[in-house]
Length: 248
Ligand code: PTJ
Image (cartoon, rainbow, N blue to C red):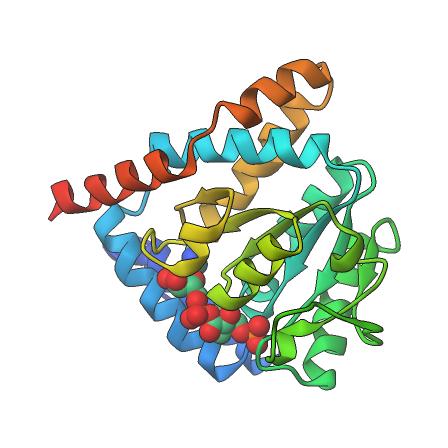
């Protein structure tokens, strides 16, 4: 792998690129995932490439909602698997009753197997990972993303969908799930349809989410409910967009 000098002004961004390219070479990320990453980079640039106060607020609300869930499901696609596999597993471990489900838009059984295996290297059997063998369909979706599990997304009350395409967020809402999205684009349909949208790079957001969950794990449910219900997604998205416009 090409060595990037530490003093390069774009060092962090270039290192993240290397992670996603390496994920693609290992068969985890779809070629389309590389393009999606580029779109994310553009929004991140406008955001100042940092976790904003709005993102922190959303991360706290997301942690509360995940801790209140009966059946939280963390949906994983090829980009998330390349960029933050360890954090995904740490999050699932920090949450009681959480399940990881591999769910792909550009679905191939081979990639599902590889992603499940890559996550398995971090979890070593300590977290339930639903990979191959989908046995259900999410209603209202014609894409391959509809393929899911009775015990996974279909049974979930709260679903975390990092780097999503908008259709499924809508279908999950129709199925009465609470949707938490991580998406750098505050204008995307996913961002707008989700109950809680974290406008941040998944690479920065996931470790903070794990910390927030650990911090709130012992909090009484009444406090968690207050945090989750006080969150206003539309207002928070508008602030994130305003921050980008001010940056410009
Ligand atoms: O692995 P698969 O087959 O499920 O495919 C995954 C992709 C990402 C290709 C698929 O879901 C897709 O096409 O997504 P979209 O519609 O391009 O949406 C991706 C969204 O994620 C866009 O709004 C990007 O701005 C955003 N995004 C990209 N990289 C990041 C990001 N958000 C947060 N962190 C990132 N690193």
